[in-house]
Image 1 (cartoon, rainbow, N blue to C red):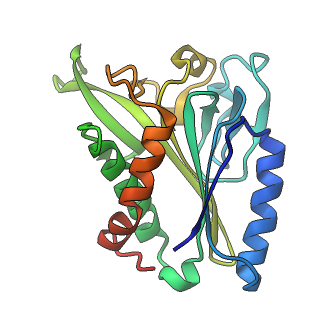
Image 2: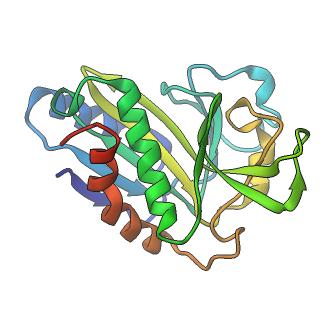
Length: 221
C-alpha cells in the first residue's frame, strides 16, 4: 500500500511540485514507496497541457501556474481536497486508461460514502453530479455540475498530480476560468449539495475506498 501523507496547512504550489518531482524520481529509482498526498492549496489557477488562453477569464485574480499535467485550466483553493497520487504503474499495469478509470472509480466510491452519486460523462473529464433541482439542460436532461477534477502526468510510468474534490471551496472563485474548458455546466461541492462534510470526513472515505476501487478498475497493486 502507498504511504499516506497529509498536510494540515495550505501548501504553496511550487513546493508541491518540487516534492512530487523528488518523490516520483525516488519511486522510479526504487528508493521510495508510492505515496498519496492529501493537501490544500492557497487560491490559484493551474493550466494543463491543453489549456486555451481564452479560458483564463480573469488572469490577474489569482496566481496562474503551468502544471505540466493533462487537461486545461482548473482552480485550487481552501476547502478543496487535493489528492496527489504518486503511484508506480510499472507494478500496477502499464495501462493509462485503466489508471484513469481507477481514479474515477475511487472518487465515485468515496462520494458514495456520503450518498452522493458521482458519474462519468463521455467527452467531459472529471466526476459529475446531477442537479435536477437546478433545472434542465438544453437536451431536457437534469443539470449536471462538476464536483471533482482529474489530471495526471506520468514519468517513467510513475504518476503525479491527480485529483481535486470540492468539499467546501469558494465556488465563485471558479468564475475566473472556464473550468476544464467546459462552458455549459457548473461546479458544485459536497457542502453546496447540502452535506456537512469536512475535509477530514473525505479523507477517511478516500482511505476506506482506495484499494477496492483500484482493484475493480483493473489496476492491481
